[in-house]
Image (tube, rainbow, N blue to C red; front, side, top):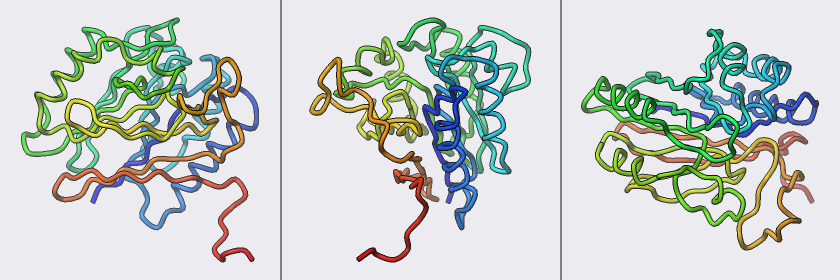
Length: 259
């Protein structure tokens, strides 16, 4: 069994609230009886791409569990690279792949500098094709990016989702090793299908964004009351993907039912 945790839309903003919520989530993961083999952070690490926000994120993600992150639309590629990856500043897409046991995880940068919506560049597609060509023939692949490539019935997110999703869908549908697509951006735990594969959208640790049945634009958009949440993906020996969404209570765990 491979266990992969997904954390998303942490929005480190220089304040204590969002940072503490991520710290609680990371502590929850570290204290699990079976720790995750990796933690994927699917974008919007920071609120505005500031260096102090990345510094806070780096401290919070400093754990003995491998943490792999990609930018979202609130991030800055150059600062992301220097602060989190220790690489020279560059505005090129931040794409990287990792082996987690028998699993290949490909993290794709869908951000467009200065824009809220997403797109996978030709450079990213070429890179992904190379990753897939190098991956073992009989082993599973997970893809992760920030922007969802499907309609989620979110009046906010659907306007700034992944552009040209059909190109991405053709690639996903054409490779049987791909067992799922993971995204963030929606601030809502969501599951649907995309190109014949599960599309699993992680909740945000910072806030919850409502769907079409609860939003009343321009009001009642974000809800900051719910506790932070995390996603746990299990890949079994048959390469079957099972996902659990777990809330991490800020008030701590209660093991006995209250009266």
